[in-house]
Amino acid sequence: MDYKSLYQASIADPYNFWAEQASEFISWEQTWDRVYDYDFTKGEIHWYTKAKLNVCNNCVDRHAAVEPERQALLWQGNEPTDSKQYTYQELLDNVCKTANVLKELGVKKGDRVCLYMPMIPETIFTMLACARIGAVHSVVFAGFSPEALRARIIDCGSEIVVTADQGLRGEKIIPLKENVDTAIAELQQVKSVLVVKRTGAQVPFNHGRDHDYSTLIAKVNPSCDYAIMDAEDPLFILYTSGSTGKPKGVVHSSGGYITYASFSFHYVFNYQPQEIYWCTADAGWITGHTYLVYGPLAVGATILVYEGVPTYPDSSRLWDIVDQYKVNIFYTAPTLIRALMGHGDRYLKTTSRDSLRILGTVGEPINPAAWEWYYKQVGNERCPIVDTWWQTETGGILLSPIPNVTKLKPGSATTPLFGIEPVILDQDGKEITGEGEGYLAFKASWPGQMQSIFNDHKRFIEVYFSKFPGYYLSGDAAKRDADGYYWITGRTDDVLNVSGHRIGTAEVESALVKHQDVAEAAVVGCKDAVTGEAIYAFIQLMDDVEAIPNLKDELAALVRQEIGGFAVPKHMQFTAELPKTRSGKIMRRILRKIANGDTESLGDISTLGNQEVVSRLLQQQQDD
Ligand code: WT7
Image (cartoon, rainbow, N blue to C red):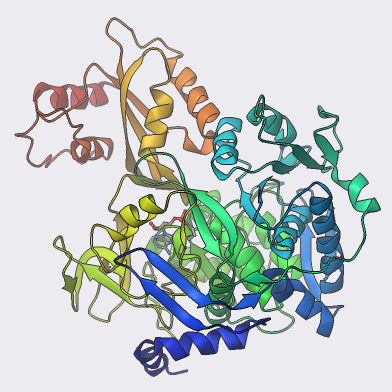
C-alpha cells in the first residue's frame, strides 16, 4: 500500500472518497442526497443527509444472512471456567428478543435508554437492540457512583435503566442494582428498570418498576424488524468530561458514525476473516462503543469480550486468554501495559502469545519503555503496534499507523488516517507548517465526528469551534516532527487523563468542596509511572478547622460518592491558602509545578497576591 498517494487522493477529493467508503462498508436502505454538508464556523455537522439505514442490520443481520454460523461473540467471564459463545445467528436472535423486551417496556424510536452494566453479552445485546429500534443508548460506565449515574440519567431524560443484579471484577462484587436504586430514588422520570441476572444474588426488587430480563426474554416474540433510520438520527449519547461544568453528552449519528467505525477498524486493525479480535475496553467508554462493538461487528469480525480484570486470578490472565482463544488482534491501554510490566515478566512465561498479529493502544501517550515491553515481550517482536489517537468526540481513530505500512516510532500516534486533515495551530490560530508544536485541530470533518452536545448545541459550538473559527479544536497539544509524525504532548485544558480515564478537574473540585470543612480546592495533574497522570488536590480548609487525621478518608469517600473511585485524588495537600493572582484567580500553573516537584523554575510569580503561599506549600511538601 502506498500510504502517501492514497492519503493525498483522499484529501484531494474528500467528497468522492467518503462516498466510496460509505458504499463499501455500509448497507444502505436509501442513498444520500449529499455526502456531507458541514460548516465549522457554525458548528454544523451533517453526513450522508437523507440516507437511510439501520446500524444493527449492518452489525448483525447482514452477516447472519450470509454466514449464520460465523462466531460473533466469544465471552470470557470473570472466572476462567465461565464462558459463552454466540454465532451471528445467535447474536441476532438475542438482539431481536432484547429489542422486543425494550418495546414491551414502552421504549420507542428516539427514546433514550440508560445502561449501567457489567461486561456481559447482554450489554452488547442491549446496545444493538437500541440501535435496532432506533432508541438512543447512553451507557454509563459501571465504575461511576450512583450520584454520577443519576446526573446522567437526568441529563439525557431516559425513562428506563438497564442494569444487572451485580457485576464481577476479580474478587470484587459491584452492587449495580443497588446503585441504580440509589441513583433513581425519588426520580419520577424513571419508569422501569430492566435487571439482568448475573450473579443471581438477592437484590431489592421494586415490583411495578423493576423487571427481570430473563423472565421477559422467555416470553417475547423472537423476531423483530429493524427500524429504518435516518443517517443523521442519533445512535447514542456518551458522557465525557470537559474543562468546566458538568459532563457533556456527546451525540453520535447513525450513518456517519457507523461508516467511520467500520472504515477505521478496517484500516487500523487490518482484520482478516476468521481472526479473533479482542479489545479490552469497557463498554462504558467510547473505545468500548466503536472498537469493541460497532466497528468490528459492522465488518463481521469475531469479537472477544472479557468480564474481569487483568490481574485475576493473577497477572497472566490476559495472556492466558490470548492463548486460549488464539487472539490475533489485541487492543488495550498504555496504563494497563505499564501495570502488567510492573508485575514482572514471569507472568508472560507460561504463555506463547503466538497467535498475536497486531497490537494496539489507545487513551494516552505510551512511553517508550512500555512500548518496548509491549513490542518485545508481549508481541515477541513480531507484531506492529498501532498507537491510536482519538477522542469520545471524534467517534473513531484519527491518527494511527497503518500496520505493516507506516514506519513506527515508539510514543507517536504517527500519521492521519485517510481523509483526515490535522493541523497544528499557534496561539493566534495560525497553521504551523512543517515541524512545530501547538494546538491540535482538524480542518475538515469526517463521518465519525460528533453532531452535538445533547441538549446544548451552544456549548458544542463554544467548546470546539469558537477559539479558532473554522477548525475542530481537540483540546490536545501536539508536536509534528520533520517526518510529519504527530506526538501528543498533553491537554491544553483542565482535563486530566488518569489511566486513560478522562476527568475534569472542576468535577473533582466541586466534589471536594461539598465537605463542610473545605473552603476551596484546586485540582491539578501530576506525572505518575503507572496511571500516566494522577490527581493532586490542594485543599484549603475553613478557618479554624484543623486537618484531622481521617479528613483525607472522608474526602476520598466524598469523591467516590460524587463521581466514582477512579476519580479519588492520589495526593491531597491541605493549605491555609491557595496561590491566587491579585484578581483572585487560582494560579494552577504554579500548583502543577509544585505537584510535579518541578520547583526549580516556578516561572513568573510576580502576579501572585501573596508570595508566601508558595513557599509555605513547598515547605509543607518537604515536611511530609
Ligand atoms: C483524550 C480523549 C479515544 C478513546 C479513549 C479516550 C488522549 C487518546 C491517545 C493516544 C496520546 C491519547 C487525548 C485525547 N488520548 N488516545 N494514542 N496518544 N493521547 O477517549 O476519554 O475521549 O479521551 O485521550 O488527550 O484528547 P477520551
